Image (cartoon, rainbow, N blue to C red; front, top):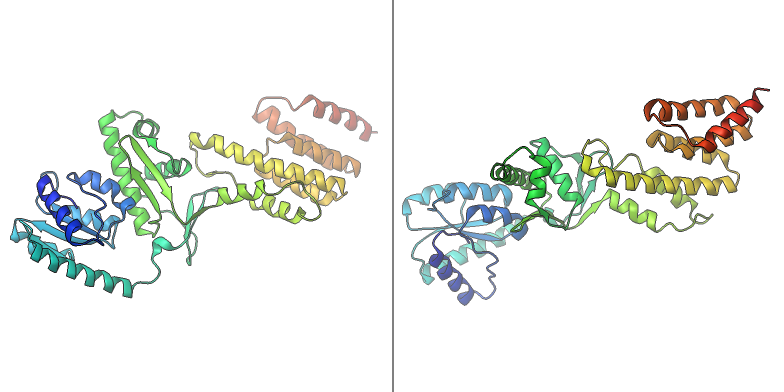
Length: 377
């Protein structure tokens, strides 16, 4: 419930809690911005909304509330009967005059019960209860259970980056100062805070529109926190699979291959966000280690075709991994495929010497010089 008059709030709260023990008052607000900040996380069934407030008209506030939570039932509370027609244009369940009398409140509660029962009987499984699948490899995508995977359609690039950043720090409070410095470093704090609030609002609105109510952004006194329910994230699933692999053996080598080839790109690889580089490198390094471990296993079992395939994929996604070139150089040399040895050396030299401006490892340079001399004769 929201009303700028404190004692009106207390009176309505007392009536509801005294007369209706099955009703739970989960939020009492005098400030519209605070209500909008918490509407998604609270997910109320009903809002008692004052029409006449100093900062915002209650009818305008109702529109914003319905955008964030289309299923909420609204009851307008006011001392001005002239607002009644506009209130019902917004499909309000009821319009109740101040001062609120218990007899009149009972009629409102009856209407609410009928309205909510009708909605319950007519609806399918709530979207908020369906599983959500988020993809963070390469590009941010989402999928609601029972539908196809889709790209987010962000209003601005700031919305996209803010969502990605909060998702990375999910279940942790991120301070407003941190977010403003990240996204609006040239703004004064007050102007940056307004941009931040507006962007948070746009994200919440989008999440509601596309059926991702299970992902909520809660406001705290110092910042924001993104929470997920019924949500699976591909990078998290993949890392859990890696951690369960154990040592490669005949019994689990297929699982190793599946995990290795599931990695099709880096964490948020299509974005140039500097803050995600650490996580990108961590997951990439984990994937390379899986590949090297699998390669070592196949090398011991003399399955060189598998070893070659693994290192070709490593080079495709992680061209700076010099051990991959070295392994293929040694394999090709053992097969007397000297042209392929030279090609691997040329690729390695091009990346390290020309692009990174560093030399390959001494052991690789020495090995190549020694073996190049041999195969030339």
